Image 1 (cartoon, rainbow, N blue to C red):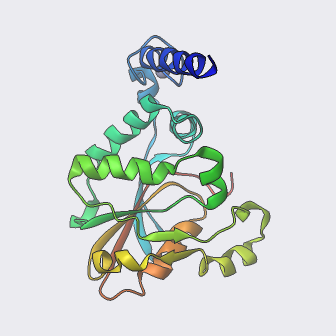
Image 2: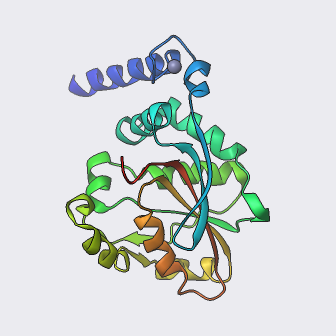
Length: 215
Ligand SMILES: [Zn+2]
């Protein structure tokens, strides 16, 4: 009986989700055009010497879309983000051979039951026909916010490890690192630190949204 009730609830929420905007709850097939209009495009920036881009400022609708997708696994929110990712073109003639998503730390993976960046990257890579290489292992304990700035910087070099079985897919390649939100850029720099140990790797990043470190 429990299983039936849960299934019915799941189907109802699925149907319901397709008929309303997950952000403003207006009647809409997916995220509504009015909400999408309020997204604020960001552009290029760098973390340390690593160049990259953000699709949006991390506020308003962009923040809400990421929240709905990451914490409620909202399909409409994922689909909206995916459409923007597919339309995005890397500047400066950078043509990625592969996309490497920043993996969730163990604590978030356990809490959410899925890895949002990996999941989004796989859908995006499929649409672009660009390989997605899940070559990073997140070694962090999920306690980043409780550490001070110096401890976080020290932690940077121990944030990620390379998956041995993916090294042949990464050596000598142009790699597009992908993350959901960049604030200090510590995750991107941690990933850069391990990936640049590989010979002749060219790196750039894309994040869905850029948050101000001062916010
Ligand atoms: Zn809306």
